Image (cartoon, rainbow, N blue to C red; front, side, top):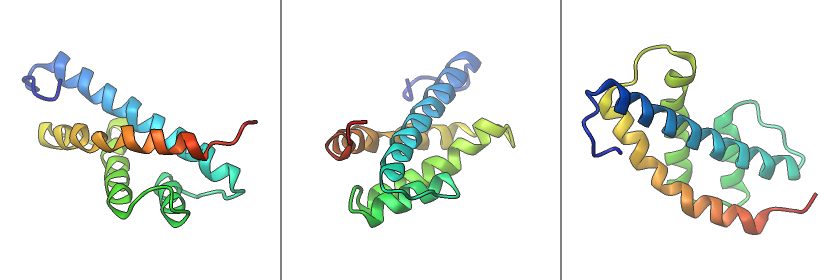
Length: 111
């Protein structure tokens, strides 16, 4: 979808919501990881910092995830309309999600 014409409002909005939802899923998975460690981060970025400190993600993945959080917040709180360039960047950064989710599966503990 990121290759489509984002000047089309419906395509722009659909991609924004998909990126928002995917980032929220990464946050939720990260929350499960850190809670299992009895750590309680103050911010979403802190979740990923803890994951990095525990060796669950790489430095490059940490950078990408922190940028995703930064780009997610305008969508969530409507500070301003995220630009088409930022939205494409967000979609590109989500490429890290597949490897992270797969790796988190091996860290997960049964309830």
